[in-house]
Image (tube, rainbow over all chains, first blue to last red; front, side, top):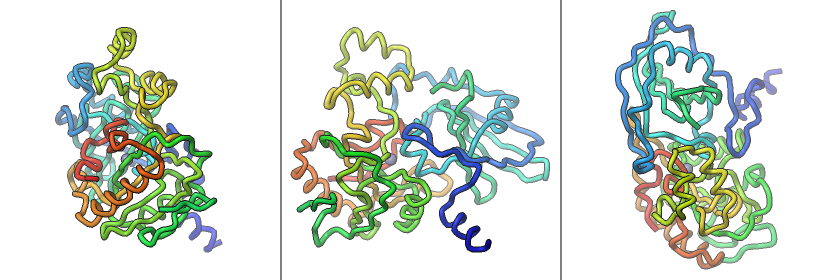
Length: 137
Length: 192
Ligand SMILES: [Zn+2]
């Protein structure tokens, strides 16, 4: 029993993660704690190679309820697997979150449905494949 | 550099650390070489990542310059992701392509690009060799650490040997964010 658990932990596998393909990384439960409040602080354009004039970050804005919905639907992804599969967008919205247990965190959500939630020293990379407008991809 | 029947390189400069699950299928004609940074700070974390999830490259270069071969050159690996439109980046789209690509749609763009042949498109998983450099994103930032001098020396040697062996023009060696939509700082300090 113990060795089976150890093997699973070493492999980093999770029984509830999807298999993953060349276009979508394995998607795992994000287990984000219940949220008390979301604050949207800023939006902008990050340090990415630009997609010339076709890319207009001003069209990407999220309200607090949209951010809550994103966290509800998001799955956790591994950064290495994400690098091999998912598009990253320079357009982002960022802010803070307070959880029901009093903990706080920082988040940053990109237009191509990838997000990062940082709680203390723990950082989760997220992906919400079914997120609709204003997300794209 | 010589490559044996199993796709492994015989060279005193390369340490074998093959993770067989990284190989996805037969590697076609090699049209390009793609340089990455791992996002982690040690070779060990990359190796464990490869075992847990089969996404990675043919080679891994540690911070001290040690080169590991991690996948056989008989197989392609999953490391590129969706392709950007090469004709947009190089300002040489046809009027029809210009019209198609005017409305920004990364998924459609990848689909249309994948149907083209290199070098009209960027190299993808099935026709490229991948090289990862161990390197994390600096804490609290969105910026990758600088590639070390030792890594760049090893990368220069490896790229030149692979380019010669597989007849890849040096113009077809790319940093990952050039051909796919990634954090622009990934491998930005890599030189070859
Ligand atoms: Zn990469």
